[in-house]
Length: 351
Image 1: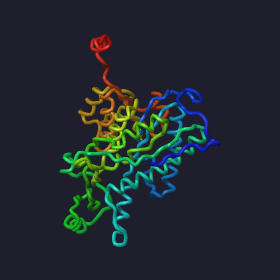
Image 2: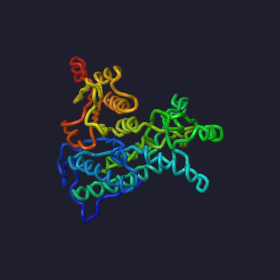
Image 3: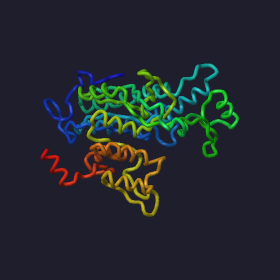
Image 4: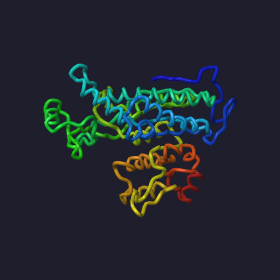
């Protein structure tokens, strides 16, 4: 874990109201923000540190605006390209440097990205004279060793290989390899359900102490419990599903999933395309059952939002460039719990 805050000479107001605090629309409520990959690496870029840092700086400016509006922010992020690059480095240097397993690569990427996010956030908060400490947490996320995903690895990771190289890896290393759309062979790993944010209590304590917490990067470092002990496992956890679990564990009010489109659409990229401004859980479930949200794009995001909204929270899908407008209800798609029937509501109130 690392933590940083504004230097004493720059310390100033804290958001959310109260003595010495700035008021805002958040009024001290907590939002878990899940950054999309475009916040760190844009399509067509090489992935240099300088490119990523520029992208992160722009994204963190918007997160700082959210803090200034009074929200307590918990920030998660993707790590696919970064972990992919680490796996490529492993492959290219295996003859001279011992390669690291996937869970360690995930941990390395959390440190790399967390460093960039934390530094940029501290700088933007200091410019606004917001005295909010930023803490980055290396986050293990527990999965079930009996999850069916382990019987059907499906998530491609790492570099492409020839058929001969893939066959050799399968025989010698016992990994699962699959041909990827005519581009070559890639390793595939399971994508199990997240079951527990292991440092959840520590994250909740940091939030209660006024920290902006960066955590659960890339869906978390996948671990399993065996006889009460944790150990890492080769897998990829969906970052949005992990964000929904995190939001529930820390008692967040809102889950905000940021992506590269302004709203959730029905009939996406068809002549019948229609944007959704607001929908209930039941309405979104019906749209999902009708096949509107594809597994490789909006499907996991809608699934994560539904999980959180079923528990009584509000979930929003919005563009990275529309963070504050989305929280104010002026942009994005808001998914809300089903209304409580009038008679049931009256009965609950009477009790």
